[in-house]
Length: 382
Image 1 (cartoon, rainbow, N blue to C red):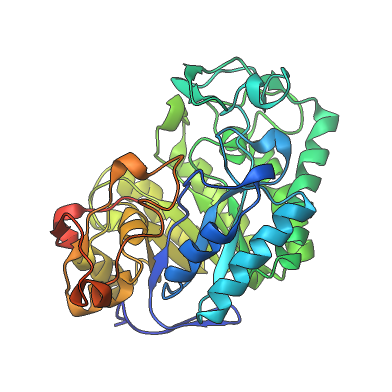
Image 2 (tube, helix red, strand yellow):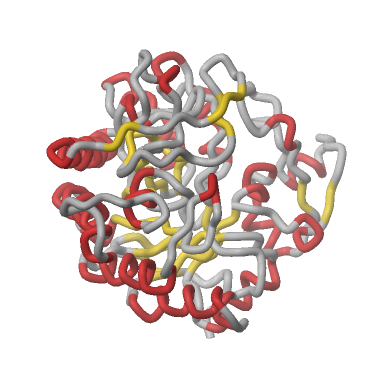
């Protein structure tokens, strides 16, 4: 049986263990939505991860839906990310860029008055945060014309090319959490009647075209995809999630991608150990994809180890726990207490709650933090 702390070959990369860092939006990009020195410090501190998946990074200006999120479409952004990848590599780490387009999860205030785009004119539920940090209701998005969709695909291609220029080790296609690819996949957000809607095969077409574009740039063993089959984020849903996400996983398998990164419900852990819809949906994904599975969602040390030992997952990605613990792999392996994240500093801040979380070694040398808990008590979310 494999262990959480065994090494793993992921495509051409040899990972020292199975504790990955999940993508975490932190809203701390500098002017022009470009990473800066503070961001390089943050990622360098966490370079002991098996590999890092960067925060979601928009492939075009229309892909933005939150303040101060980084892009990968300008030279300044490429230069900023090169600073990050150099820092991670100098610290001995590995980092993938997550390619992102938010689709309808945006507002015209981000786009000079133009409405956000989506597969269909179906608004998301809830509210969006504006560039001025106000909260307003989501707008009804403008449906993309059939002839516009290939240009969005090209934006993913250019993002993949720019990720190579920036020195990343690979890329992850963000197909989860109610964003543009997820909107095309699901029957609840896609009622198109052209070649990008209707049947499951047609709803998969946009994902397939994005995978084609990205793997034209990167070898497939340096590409992953993130999926969230049962996440009801912003009211998104699908009538047949088992068939839809089995199809998405099978598409990833056709392209021989390095991994599928699964956002899972809180319980049971791992999902295939339980009964009901979660077991059916996630079991179907596992059956359809022969590559590595990265599990993500409220894992603690014991459930992560169990998922690896059962062979359900090859890696487990941690989010909030990595946010607050730069040295998380060491703490998990040695059973050390962990820093509790300060939720008030998750978004739209500066160094506080970003680069000032102490390592265990620093704590022993006199650094202080308000609260320490066990990982099981925290149950971090990625």
